[in-house]
Length: 251
Image (cartoon, rainbow, N blue to C red):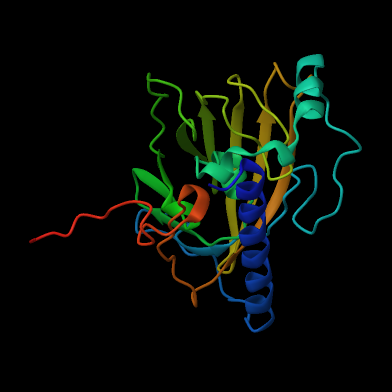
């Protein structure tokens, strides 16, 4: 059985490979031009398959430039950050959900599907998805989850998505910046033209940080891409190598 360290290294290797593949594909891609599309009801249409910049450190911007000298940690947050050691294993090596912000920062494609009532993020990574009501309703009551509880509303041509009720078991990004179950994430999404989405993510977590902070990203429309099936299996051993007996149906 692979160690947690090995599983973490394997996950990091595949993420790096995906980032390299995305970079190669980008050199052959011609940006989509045109005006901002709208739905029949007149709202900005965010639908499409999008390339997200891979920035494993959320303190950096979409071009990889440092945006913060250091994060405004509380004493608890600083201790959590200094205690994190990916060599001792990371939850993603066990195929557990990345969580909202970490999923937004991975290089795999993301598809957005939108109606007047809902917007869905379909992440290629592990075939995860999250559905956001965008008709102005309030947050639901329920148990904390990996991706939190998201609701959205429009402020002019900007969609504002408010997410709370996280279970506190994830990390904000690949390098492992911490958060608590008090995390509150606000996403502000706008589409200045047909080929791009401007994304701002605002982080508010009073247990982990002394003040709010944010980062920005630009997503690029990729009409030449489709989201593919993605399966992550802990330890990545084939189910057909004899470790697990697979039922033979009809016998």
